[in-house]
Length: 264
Image 1 (spheres, rainbow, N blue to C red):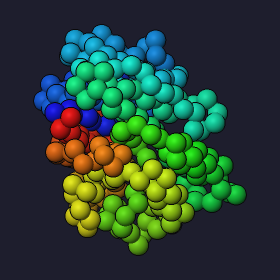
Image 2 (cartoon, helix red, strand yellow; image 1 turned 180 degrees about the vertical axis):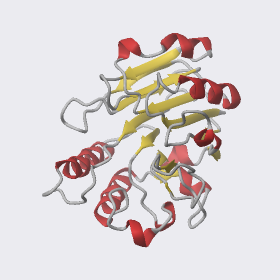
Image 3 (tube, one colour; image 1 turned 90 degrees about the horizontal axis):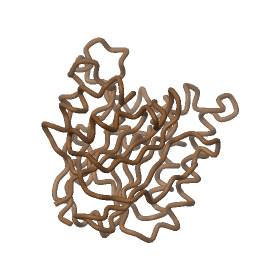
Image 4 (spheres, one colour; image 1 turned 120 degrees about the vertical axis):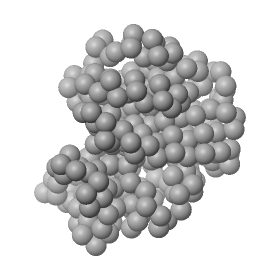
């Protein structure tokens, strides 16, 4: 069995204590982090190695964005795509070399897209749609059993948000974003593992705003984080876990970890 976790950590150095706690409690084989907010030279390599995660790939930049994949399983760096088309560190891919040999794990942080869902009024929203379009063109070429995980910053289904009606015009749940993400799914035939394991309309959120002092009050969540697999890989899924507890830990991320297990 191989287990893979994805987590938008919102600053890996600031939140290393909760990362350490999570790894000690759950021990996934592979951890994909987004929004690490650090350059590679400042990444906490030793802290991860002390926890048994000796294999590390980092694509970082100063203060913003950034992704990293750490693993107990040997891997090789497989890819770095600039789907933002401006040099931002938002993707890294690795190929597992031990258990699960040959499996590709793509780790991505899709732009949030600003506040106004109109590319004419909001450059960031246009950049987000263009980012997903470049991902879609890439997905058409994928020919290996692949898992793409991360913060997609889109909650596609009505049951992926606390109020479909109230969020229809809010960035992350607008029809144009949902349509864009659907084209990405169709380009490779990705399987949405989360919703295969927790079928709609069951409750499933991965993000709650910092604006609420008590994130559980009203439960105003969104499913922004995803784990999508190639069809042949999706057939080997044996479990999927939504770890909500870390949202209540000291100095939490606004996102929670998700873990999928495979019989590889």
